[in-house]
Image (cartoon, rainbow, N blue to C red; front, side, top):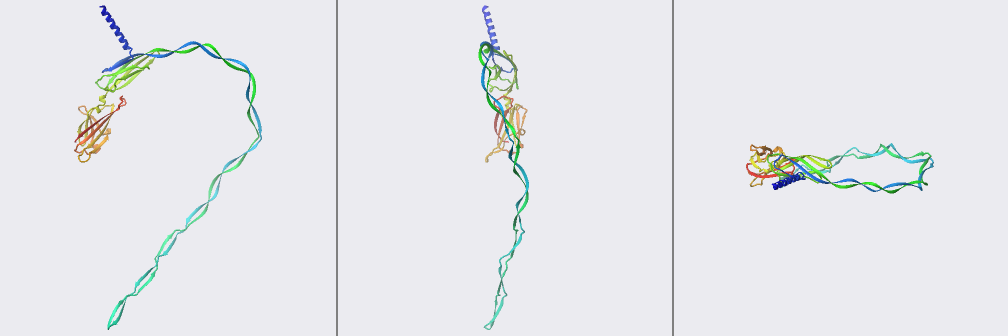
Length: 428
């Protein structure tokens, strides 16, 4: 019975010590497993160096005045003047004068044009005179022959050729009036009347009298000095930690809280790149420092966004639902408000003899495609091919689809863009 009592007492002491250590701990790890809130209590004693004033007897110095009779040279000033007689003060000044001046300029004009004619070279003109019949009797028979006419020639004068020659250029100097301004120098003199010119002239005078001096004198006095000492400053934390998630699914994660050397509350999500959440944090923390103790109270809200839901468009396998000459339909994952998608499409017609022909290869605008939810809850990407004015023939086509997701600024992640590439070979 006595042994049972001793064991019970020992268990109570151990439980008390464990409770004391838990309430006074400066770090704590909180494991999230679906709860809506958690109370964080921390406590830490920080060694703070402070100073207190201490008085002690020391030596001070004061200045004691005393008087001595001394003679010293002192520089003084007296006014001295001299008479300056009147005089003319002359200088050259310039005045602007303007007048009309006769100048000359060369003026030219052409005289009247004239007609000049010349005869061309003459030519010899000949003509044949009329033929004559000449007859005579030969052996009792009359014989006649035609004798050609005589050639008559004369010289015919050449043709007259005329042209117009311009008149002769005549130049002469013509006078004209020009308004000309010049700076004309002239000598100007002003009379300066007689006057006195005075100035301060230094001189040295020996002056004797009592002069006050000071000598240093030490005396005992009370002084103050700052003595450092270590003060144990208590920092206590009482914070309500809340969790908000966008789905019913819960996966464990660990958040570490600690009081750092500056007395501030810090938190760290362990292995954040491996947990299935994007976590955003909002704080409403009040810190009250009374000098000897610091109390930190408030709330911290963690919003948990399911990674697989946000990244569903790039994590779900893409399928071609329909492909014809007018429309191309894909089956995708779910879209999310915290991620903006960018769709790129490449459609290539495959040919056996000739090279493959690219029908379209571009990033689509928001107006060029639609995302709709089908009856089975899947998201369908619908692209109207007729808007691109392309001719989809009944041949094999290679389809390349690229999806890029850009996270919203409110989502904390070192990687801001996620991509997926899919390729298909289909026949309409």
